[in-house]
Image (cartoon, rainbow, N blue to C red; front, side, top):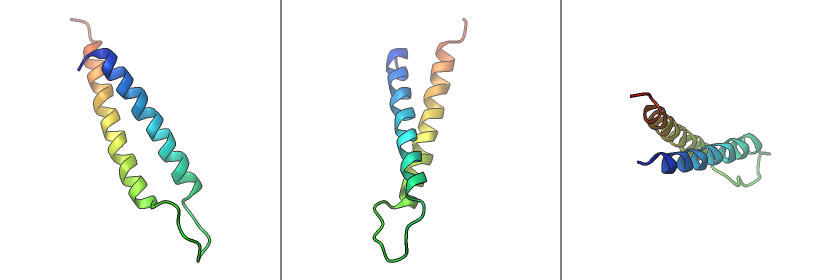
Length: 68
C-alpha cells in the first residue's frame, strides 16, 4: 500500500470511529417501550473492527516512515 493511500484510509477510518462514538454516545440508553434506532451492540462490534483496522494502518504508516 502506498503511503498516500494509507493516509487517506487512516483519515477515513478516523472519521468513521468518530461517527460511531457519537452515535453510541447518543443512543446508549433509550426510554423503555420506544423503538431503538440503532443496535448499539452491533455498533460497538463495528467500532472494535474499525479501530483494529486503524491500528494496522498506523503501523504500516509508521513502518514506511522509519529511516533506512
